[in-house]
Length: 126
Length: 412
Picture (cartoon, chains in turn blue, yellow):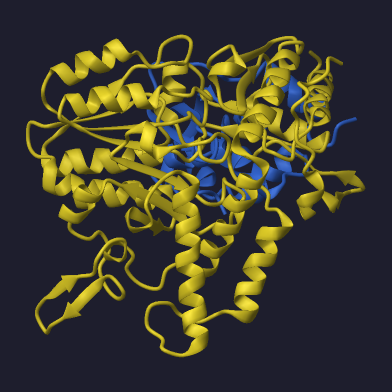
């Protein structure tokens, strides 16, 4: 069993959940990982202060795509207030694999873009 | 496996880093396009300079300062001679980026105005794009690009057509592409550029380390390269320029060392090349680079090129054995520098590099500081394997094995 490329990571990479466009949508953002040129955008539909639905789009490595796919399931139904408070540990724990310093931004790109759409804060999650 | 051509070098023992083990494994380094490893003679030269000859240059009368002066200027002589340039028109910079910025500021701001055009190519490194974007925006000039064709090459006819528009002041282009590996026909291009009354600047970062470069026959007005890719230390780059142009130009950075005299309100400039070397220069690094080019000359640049061309041909041959692998750039090793950029179907380049690392193989993945080119190629990123004098055919075999093992991890 591969430590990083576990079956469920590869499964999410090959068949990512909640990928595509979502129209109409209320919030959107697009971010890049300057290290590798990866690009990830999100469309979010909001209802009663919560994420009703969302879709990611873009391209990236297995870690960034799987992280977005896994996070998307958790983010549905979450209040925007809670989304604003999500931190890097939340994502890394959710991913469930040892993420090296060089791959950290791959794992966090989706949270950066979602938080950016919700709060306008474009900083990397700490 | 098929044998690699007879004329291969066996110099790995000269490079102490290859004695290191990584979890018991040997270092398989296929990232010389990013930076080269250093031979012991260069490491020793740096240490020896710092240990026994260290003083600032150009200002001391004592014996030690004179030694430092002599070492720095001797390095300049060696570096200039290595590419057939004169010492007075050979300027030490920090790297190629600084050299190109120097031209964009000092030559560009005096010679490029509203309505003029700067011509670069779609295969440039960001270092040879962004300084021109900034210049053109500031001066109201236009930045145009020569296209890269499906073979990864430029067209001389397209260059002629661009030059015929009559507004091109400078053409800046890579000698060897850091992504495609394409070797551009520099002499034919500079001849056309000069005939059209424009200036040429060649980014030789990938060329100087791997092939004999003779500036006299290339005919470029400016030529820049960097030490750390040519077996030398980081922190030292080189800019060669045509004397008349350098003499007319205002300095880039100003301060100490680059002046003839300083009054309360004004200063006059030092002679070439010091006019362009403000502040304490990279003395030990230049000394190290002097020894690096001596080492390369000792190998013979024709042998270096033959070695790397043979390895590149072998790499191209072996890489296509990997299912789903697509190499970008010129198909024949004859027309390319010592690298291969590729994509692997079903595995993102970042993961390709990670999987290669598991096989102990160091390759690079990403946009290689060439995002416009990536867009032209229709990819977000590629993986890139590049070879140096110390590589052997077994390194390529290890890469191919690692890629095949990686495909298995991904269930392909």
